[in-house]
Amino acid sequence: MFTGIIEATGKLVQKKKDGSNIHFMLEAPFISEMKIDQSVAHDGVCLTVVGIEDHFYTVTAIEETLSKTNLGEWEVGNTINLERCLKIGDRLDGHIVQGHVDQTAICDITEAHKGSGLFGFTHDIHPDYVTIPKGSITVNGVSLTVVDSSRGFFTVAIIPYTLENTNFSQLKKGSKVNLEFDIIGKYISRYLAVRMPV
Image (tube, rainbow, N blue to C red; front, side, top):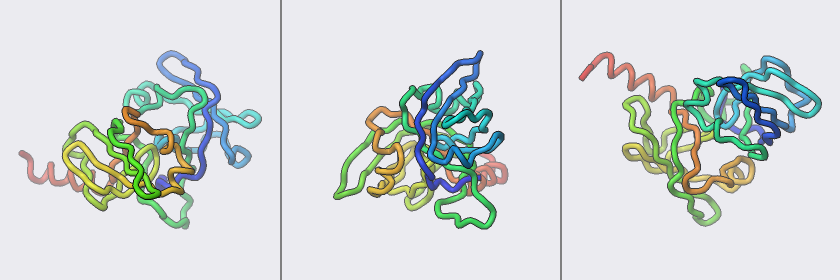
């Protein structure tokens, strides 16, 4: 489990196809503290560390993961948002994040607003995947508060610190991002669908 508070950014240094899978090699500032089998969120996608060598570590994304995320579009040199899993007893500064991406979205708005950034995203309409104003959403692993919300679209405001310490500064119109909708909202939606089927 994660919180959506990005711990650091890493750099993709190698991308290697292996059948329908892709092995990604990255460098990260906390590499000395990592271990094999550790779970790390990469742009919001929970991946298992399968190898560590010198200043680099490797994770593998399978076909299912690649089909539901933007990982297949990663290129060597890309900056990746990283978060190690939550420790029991730590503060939950963001919100409950599982590291399981629900779908991708396209960035439609990138605007500067008096020191902050406003970003808008369009996503596929799905009954279980909804946003509400002042609710939580995870974009590329970052826990954010929704500003405005409509069917298949939402906006978020980004503070300067987040712009400087995540890969949000690299987003532009047309960028594909990973979304994980609020787990509480998803459970409520599914419960209502079961109790009150159409």
